[in-house]
Image (cartoon, rainbow, N blue to C red; front, side, top):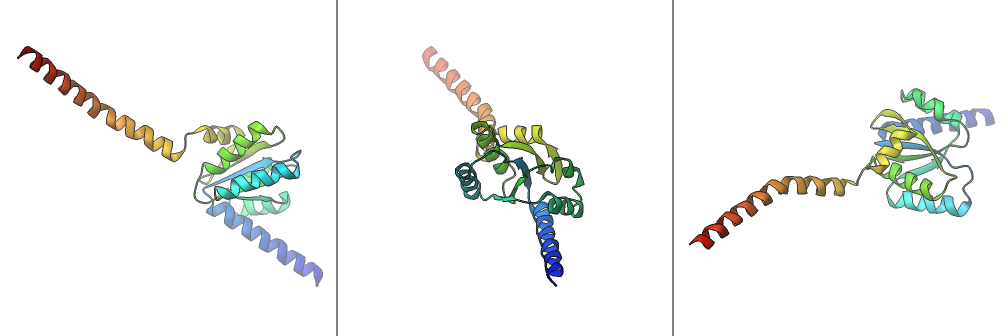
Length: 167
């Protein structure tokens, strides 16, 4: 009877991980070996504040979930101690937080992940982390859109001042 319960618990865990992999806009896999309790607690706090779920999971369960979610390319990085950050709303948040934390703590290593349903490596995760925030991108877009109008207004003002000076 105990074996049946254990099997059911594992099947339920695989189903939960599969659902998280499918629902997440981004998932980042990291090796946390060498981090002390205080560092892991700080990392979890930062991720929680950003709405990111961070879990240490058994690789065997995650492998079964990746196969069910049709993301089996992820299995190659599921080696050693594995922590996974799931984010439903913000695709950049887990990559940015984990990358910034890894810069300060050499023990944390990014392995790869899934972004918008596509399996990516550590290099792509780091590139994603280096992107400006959504607000930063919107402000850049706004300044690009305002530049022609601002230049036109300055040109009109210059012409007006020149005509006043001639009059």
